[in-house]
Length: 461
Ligand SMILES: [Zn+2]
Image 1 (cartoon, protein in one colour):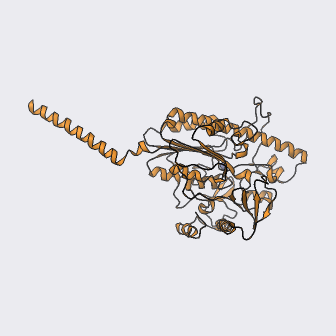
Image 2: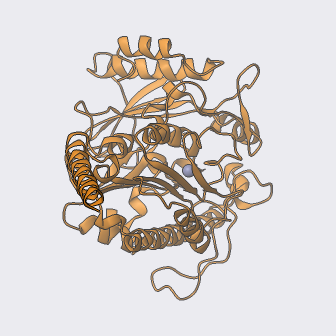
Image 3: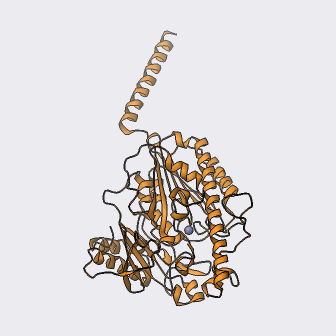
């Protein structure tokens, strides 16, 4: 008996010593799961800044974003610029932290001998190769990596390479099947499967603004009811190709553009509503009461008649590139100036480390020719474009021509001025354009050596 008592005392002592040792070890190493914040990265696909009430639009299209941006400590800008002009290149930039000419995932005109996949009949170069993705990096840090995407181009099925590093995925098969309620249900079902205590890296693409646009109902005071408008540019006999082929009378064009503008604003309102429901789910899950970061941005905008253009994907004019960026952090560590242009690519830094890089990223975008649109609508849509924003000044390149827009005096970019040879940014901008032209001719993804060489030359930051 006495021996047993002694033994149990020794055991209790050993357990206590073990607990103390574990406590010391915890202090020394830290608990990786309790110190790493949940990271939520949301892309509201195809949302241009100037159509958000958050950015001064005269219709109440974004009540959820408006309220979020007004919360204390939240940083929001309407002057972020997407790195690319459509889904694949911009997402590839957001997922690698690199500009489009470096990762090279974009349209290609001639697929011969190039690693390519077909996206809606168009040859494109997927995100391949050796640049690690945000999801891979987060996974290596112990995160559970989850993607819920309403845009089928951001999925395994499309073979665009954008799924690399995600452990749990909910993806759409075609545009329209994961919008609104369906996206919310997909998010809920994904989060049910996240049962461990690991920190969460959650990427969500809200694609409600993409096609198909829904008819505008008659119960909204700020927009008239509208029937369905098919906004796919490649379907014969719908209004989009007729607009591109210049087959509309002036009156018909004005009617059509008013319809397109109303349908777009309604789609933005729906996407904002979906964002609200996503934020509610995260609130209920407790994410917002734990250490967390939230980034909301867009991958590109949409032309609604400006420059005689519709849709998106080639031209780096403002309607296709100026997007919102909202950043929420439970431990804010850096701030951005909201009145100056900034690279939406900073989303990568904010997601990865919760802070902007010491040296701000250059604000640049690249646009590549879309093979199928070029084939359908001719030279007008066969363009390689680039831009570099510098305050109110926008350096612009299109098909061999360099010019400058003064965005303050000429916000609609109707008056390009010649770019002086001795402009202080000209050489740097020409280097960027050279990178773009090289990428369009390149047959494979860039090697590590090529990226390092470009870095050494100052082409890559
Ligand atoms: Zn997109």
